[in-house]
Amino acid sequence: AGHYLGIKVVRVPVNPGTFRADVEAMGWAVCANTVLLVGSAPSFAQGVLDPLEALADLAQRRGVPLHVDCCLGSLLLPLMDKLGYEVPPFDFRLPGVCSISVDLHTYGFAPKGSAVILYASEEARHHQYFVAADWAGGIYATPTLCGSRPGAVVAATWAVMLRMGEAGYLGAFERILQATRTVEEGVRAIDELAIYGAVDTSVVCFGARPRGGGKAISILQLGDAMVARGWSLNTLQNPPCLHLCVCMPHTAAGVAEGFILDLRAAVEEVLAAKGRGDEGAASAVYGLAELVRENSVIEEVACTFIDALYKV
Image (cartoon, rainbow, N blue to C red):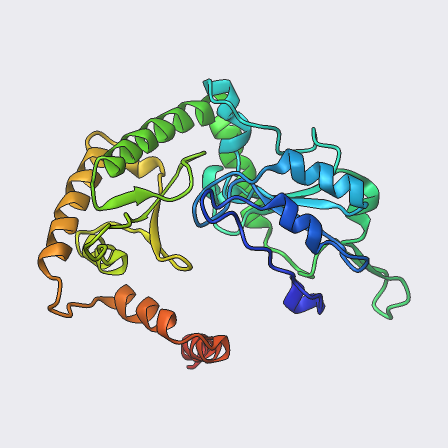
């Protein structure tokens, strides 16, 4: 958004231990030109909830709206309390929250592209609209940057939500959260790995456990070894780590347990391969990114990749 709108995005480092937003540091970053604060519920990488109550209080005190990114939280986070999980307030119950984004194609099980943005007031929502009252083709008004949007996605999303209902979502989320706990416990039991952050929802993020004298396991090679075993993991950077976003397929009988068995085997494989220079795709790409600190070079490579997708 900052790139398209020409707004400077000020990045504030998260707490290095919890990976949550550093409220004090964000407070120091606020200035007279600040137009928005952003917090996550949860964050994509480590899957942790930011201290949104404190951020909302900061937003109110400084007179700046707070946007909550609940894209990954989707419908799962709002319903977790009904399953007995303690979830701190993250929505419009907090007076400082102005808007919330939600991806219904994640934990709403809707088709890809069915994201919504919610506003605390009509006044805030109106800033999103565009109206051309004097166009020769008539009065043109659109609520988004997209002039035309496919109605099929909207209709399919509505159908999915009606079919699932609250009971259907609660049943699915209970299975997902149970599978998440199985994966979390399994990862914690592997000496070479450590949970990064906390498992606040359905994301289990892990990396190499710091070693006293020996070299830590290569988390990138571990990711490649898991891909070779048929698992889909997100490879993350700064710091290097992996995360599994637990979904319905992982709730089938024996799947979560099978993931841990394969993870243990992959750890042994990577440890046995130390010094041989075995590299898969993730190790090559993200390993290069760790070495090349000039972002412009990485951006140019990424643009070249996108160009290749669009060339006929």
